[in-house]
Image 1: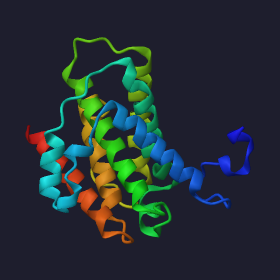
Image 2: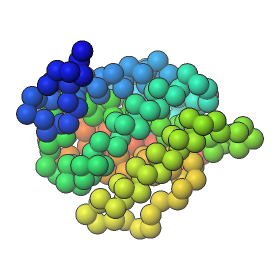
Image 3: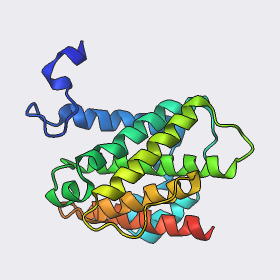
Image 4: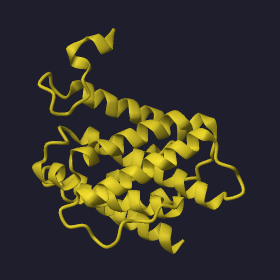
Length: 203
């Protein structure tokens, strides 16, 4: 029934307004929280990227299981939307974020996706199932498209292996958040992801 209504369109530029788009972000956040309770670990109230990054590093590792599949699908969808629209263009035009809620939902989706990709990289002995293979393929496509959409692509296209994709997802969304000029808080999220990525590489 919802799909039959004009408001069901998830395009952020839809003339009916951003309410369905915001709702889809909150739905993605709900799925992420069911799979990985990031809330107590974010330390966003500190407004300190170092504290936030350290708190994210203290999150328990993600365990690969079928229960994660819906959350990962929503996470991939969330991170792919601004990529399809043009990463740098959306960040600079300020057209993507109508509220900080979008940023917070995307932030947690990126953290979950990155942690899951690292779990896949670490657990080489466990065979990938069909859904996991699809999610990795989608992650590769999003990362490659994001790199192509940047105004000034930095360095070579990121690698295609899970560990490299985990780092690339954090790097891409750190860049996206740091370019936002509408909300200072979103810049803090971007810097936090950058420092979290550094901790992951050094660990």
